[in-house]
Image 1: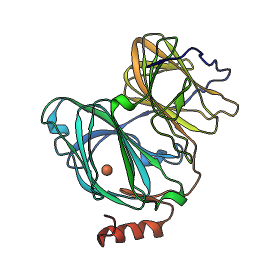
Image 2 (image 1 turned 90 degrees about the vertical axis):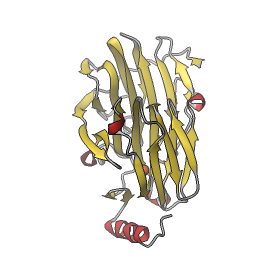
Image 3 (image 1 turned 45 degrees about the horizontal axis):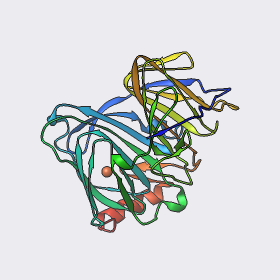
Image 4 (image 1 turned 180 degrees about the vertical axis):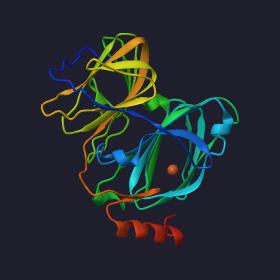
Length: 290
Ligand code: FE
């Protein structure tokens, strides 16, 4: 754990543009989850395509897991807060994702994988984020990295905010992952009551925060638990300032550089045109994705 000595002071922090309530849904073999970033927000939150939040103490909500399914054209970032999930893919990779760990998978030209709970009881909680790939990288070879909790850098600000830096950088600490094209920032913040956290952000980067414990305040507006706040891209703004509510809070802060390329999605395939989607479906049917 690094102790940050310099707190940046923002002159023009962003306001909230919109609060979003996630949609309850299920995916895989009946896994109950909340889709926070839905397809209608893909353009607004480019380069991010989806954010699912899952959190339950009931094994019936997760035990089916996500049996074999394909992906092409983007990256999946799974952040496990609690529970254990076994990952296997068609390239022969496998790994165990457990509390505080991240799995970063680049589907590229194609992968077939399963994500199955490795527990029959207890709590399962976490997030899956989909991050787009630029057109030039969509057909790259698949790749993945399991990042155990111990390899995710943490920084504590002078105010006492604990920051797990999954991607990008915060308070002088580089995160576990960097991506040049989309410059993703992915922070997990633990804010004791009343503490303030500041993160510089380029005004053009799309950014949102999702609160999963307690409540935060952004520019005078409260963001309750299980809400996503889309942060305004106000020209000349220099970052985001969050404050923990009376009972403290935990939240993920995510931002990235938009790709500004066409988005064509059909289920687990995200390409730039319908032709490329037809090709992905055909390749999958013909067994060329594995
Ligand atoms: Fe998957």
